[in-house]
Image (cartoon, rainbow, N blue to C red; front, side):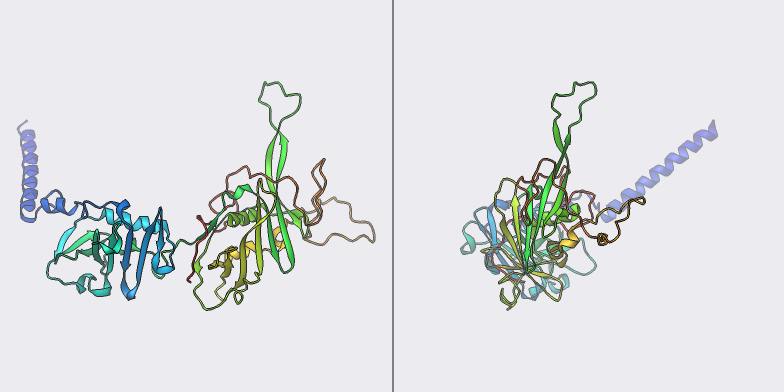
Length: 423
């Protein structure tokens, strides 16, 4: 018993000595958490800041870059980019980053600006004004610098302080990525892709017409229920057909992708070169994309497509809008597919199929057969779309306009057509 008691007391002494050692270290170094400096560092820097009160934004950065944005009603425009509509996501990111800024810890009071990336145009200079605009004093103004090998922190200086603050922030929160634009790259947003009934692509070789078709079937009757006198029908499948210049079943995943881009499209850049619309193949256009949505009787033009440049991008234009855009090559390639690319390959004949009679020509390999008309309907004339508009697919489309499980295609963009240009 004595030995056991001694052992317990010994363990207790060891624990007490360890705690005493920790307390001594704390007294010598100060606690990293909970002391007054740490508490102050976590306080909000701009305590009275309200995002909704901001009406003008100016961001000046390295290499003489400068952007000015102004609020116009509920939207923002980029004053320094021909008053083009601003990307609301970038505006929200900047205002949110200002709102989240903390006081941080004092890093230097010696004005060592170059060391912390704050000298001259090394820094990102952010200035915000209220409803009175630039005629009044700014409501927020600061410079933010970065140093190598410290991705988490930035160094902030207020104009009326010598103190340099170390804060958790990133200069990337206060503007677009390097070499990019503040402008909204959304060219148009005409609604859900699954409400498109037909697509037309007009080119020098004529028009390729695609129509969506609903395949109906009897609705299943619940077990034990009395079947109705007249079977109820429901949509079993939604497919795409090539209507002109050939007729046949189209590749669903590919047509769904085209419909996605016909509904929403985002550019990769705004044209800022010296080439005219005619020189870019847009007057007249090389291709014209037309869409008929459910409930509409006539197709309407949504996009004019021009030449493909040496980088693989297509020049584009919207009807009655002077802006010239560039879209990624893979997006344009989808929109200008040939009719043979769009058609599904016919099923291979069964092994025991009867060979063609002597002298009869066998169908060409890979050739598409004509689609038989639905029972009780009249087949459409050449180049005409079915009279009854198609309905959306049973599965919801993914971000790129194609249903889940289809081969990958780039996501379609959101928003409405922009004005102004610059590449």
